[in-house]
Length: 299
Image 1: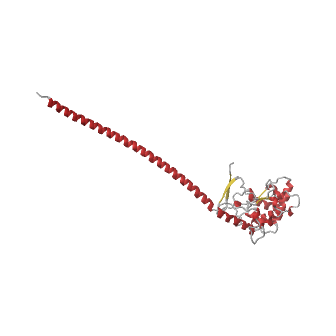
Image 2: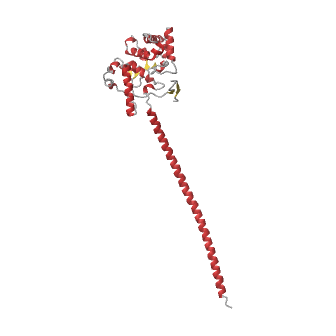
Image 3: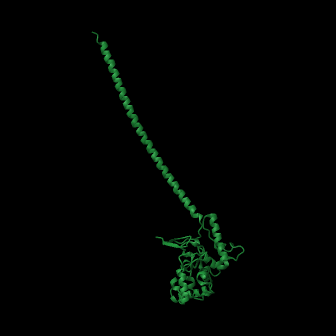
């Protein structure tokens, strides 16, 4: 009996089975390989997307922060505030009375005396003096006398209280002032310490920072307003504070009396420094009520 055809048939069937098994295994392996490859690729792409989104968010946040700073700077620059009218007032904006109180000869002959009297009149004529003639001079004389009688080398404001009951009451109201005041509209009583001080130097006036009422006491209202207007104009053009140099004072007021003429005899009392003093307190004022709140700055 010839068994060769049977063997060949078995071998053929076996080869077909083996081929099918191999193909199934290959298909399974390919499927697994594709599955793993897909997830590996998906993970890589997801990581890249997340990284890109994170970087984009950081960039957008940085852009927003930068834009916010720019907007803040623009907002800050939109509203002009004279360095002469900060709240609370810098000491350099005030008239230092110490040089006047230290004069051993007749203080009436010193130009600083007229400036101090004029400043008192500008600030307090309407709310307290009630247009009484020469009240500013009477009060200033009493303050100087009280300072001399205190026999202190560096008297302070509390040493300036006059002995005369009427003037003493008047000076008390000036020192106390009112929380709500406005020198432009003449509302309220300006606190004395906002415009006068007793310092430990012989510099009475810091020209670059002197308050508007002090400028008016030195130059008169017309020239003082001109100085303020020129400073505002310079800020609007340059977005920076401008300063009057000593040499320009005689050329900046066409058709008006030279500003230098007002400085005769005052040179020893004046500083032209442009350096801002160290900030010691911050304050805010309500636009409607003019009420102010002040907080000290931690050093």
